[in-house]
Amino acid sequence: MGLLDGLLNEFMQGGAQGAQQGGFPGAQAAGGGAILAIVLQLLQQNGGLSGVLSKMQQAGYGAQAQSWIGTGQNQPISPDVLSQIFGQGQLSQIAQQLGVSHQDAASTVAQALPQVVDRMTPDGSIPADHDDLVSRTLQELMGGRR
Image 1 (cartoon, rainbow, N blue to C red):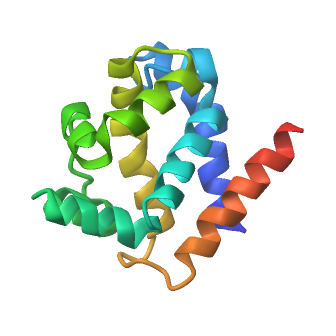
Image 2 (cartoon, one colour):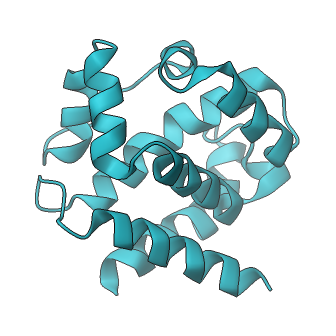
């Protein structure tokens, strides 16, 4: 459970602090747990870690995604690139969920997605149970909110 706890703690405690320090733009409105849940839902809706990696490779951003999976420094991704990869519709939906502008939602996801992928791939590779890991983390988050 250490990986799940680490993800939850990073976003539950770090989200609001990150917003105050220029981190997650939507964090003050939504909280770190909401951002984590939204990023996990985005992963789930796009085929999990491997599905997102595939989409990023097809769009020419495979090196960035590989950096998140690998053990080195995470390369940044721009909000505009995420709009290309995931489409305006998904990011508009995220903006509505967070109660922020489309640009702020894209910026939030651009900052959070590399961290989530990095934490879910601590050994530098996609774990075999990554889909289950995404589902379990979402269930834990949603269970904690009710």
